[in-house]
Length: 401
Image (cartoon, rainbow, N blue to C red):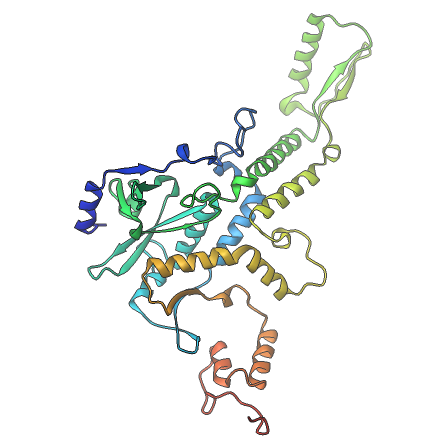
């Protein structure tokens, strides 16, 4: 990817930039290193992102949000004088259909959403043609992009080399050439914070519970324990008994018949799962993580609210969890593509809340019968061709002003 010469000159001459890094941002800490301020002093370890993703309580909401948004088709719509938005064909819309050379639209939006959910920031590098029109977009690794601020307050982005995106060397680009979608900017307006910042400890605990359970069941569901005797045992005898017991009844030899004399008695030391409330702890971890992602519990295996319709639950899911992510991405596209004031990027939400055929046909029939829609509008939504005389809403003759 070759950048315009004017940018190259600008990057080389604009040397007086002050790096905005976590070190000089008050209170900002990385979720991968510290789940809360002072955690390292308390020797509380938090798993890295790759390990945390192995816990289904994190993987499930993360991939569900990603899948539900990426499947929606992004389109350009134009608002007319009456405030009605209609989809339009425009050269600017080509980048929405095929964002770059190696990703289709679903893969592109999946990476966009995952970057924002995992790191709180999505950086999309623009590639323009000779007309200055954005023709390609590349999602950059958020861990290799650093926002920079000049003394005058101008914003730049330092991008490390990325062969997949066409960056052969590190460059610094002005904010006009980067789409920066961020959220939860708790400590700095240019640095987003992911949901994992607040639930990393819960995710780590849930993963360790599962790992401990795996070890337990690998051990034939037999807890660790100790040998006790009512008589006094000297250290040499205790060591000999310990070594003999581990050699004959440990590892893959668990399950053999043990014969103990001289009043020796085996006592389990591990707390059973029911006493440790293992299931309750796992459920709490999943609930805490879902709350951080604003994910309704019924979407991740929780109880379904009594009396709630499918449509009502989907609306709750959309408004609580997806809406801000969708509208933020739309606005980034509007500003990044330089659209006119009456042209917008819009996701087709019909792909999110699809009704069953009977409900959809009934809703369309009621809309046509009530005079809200023209027959051809209803037919178009069912991918049917128009019919003669169907362009106007139908209503009974006696209803007139």
